[in-house]
Length: 329
Ligand code: CO
Ligand code: CO
Image (cartoon, rainbow, N blue to C red):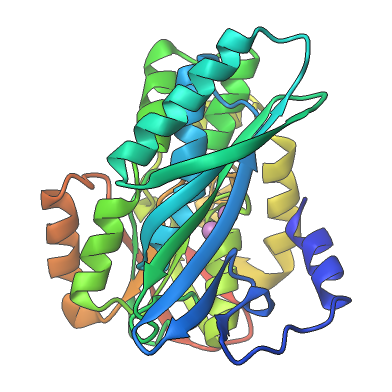
């Protein structure tokens, strides 16, 4: 579902009135937080994907890492998970076994107890997890506290959408596929721990609405505007070639259309890079808003903890006419 449709639906639903719901879907986050007591809150999220890799084991890993991402984006620790599977009867059960094995491997890596799950017959194959995490209610990180003067750090390169579209068309190199798979299966755990340690102000993970879509949600929730330096955004090496070759997912085009009125793009950035900044991501990185005095040490910590692709991509400014200003350099 695109951002516009989702906003339409949510607008018509009643607001949740419960004092223990300390972060819910009216703030357009995709995880909710429920306070259990003074020092523990539950963070809950769910995400399901259709296959994005040919290998079922790899797909299982990607879907699991993707499902865990919203928990990490809130600076929380995932503790339990349940599998959700949609499975076509025509598929071999061995395929399902490989998917679940992939999910289990990631759950183990994340130190998450996989408690069970549910499988339904479905036309298309789908897999994901519902994940529960815990966080101290005063230490949770949300997308609504970015402050003017903050620096923006993105922890993974952009381009999984266009490269998987190239993969489906048989036009992605083995190297490009390996690069996105490695990135999509890597947990945002280290990035999350680093931002919690340093006391980052706000965070969101980059998934279906693309970098600019999720960045805009963060800006609007925080009542600020953002300045993003297009040439500083880390990209997968073959992502630009995919855009040039027209291998662009429908979701990416929708994202670009939806975001257009809210942003101002320096013409020097060009159509192709602008579109890539809207590319629908799967299991993307964290976009972290951090005090400028802490930005360099956060970046250093991220690199030391193996989040080697993390880059400073822009800054938070006071609220202006546009939500995001994309500058060339
Ligand atoms: Co999500
Ligand atoms: Co998210």
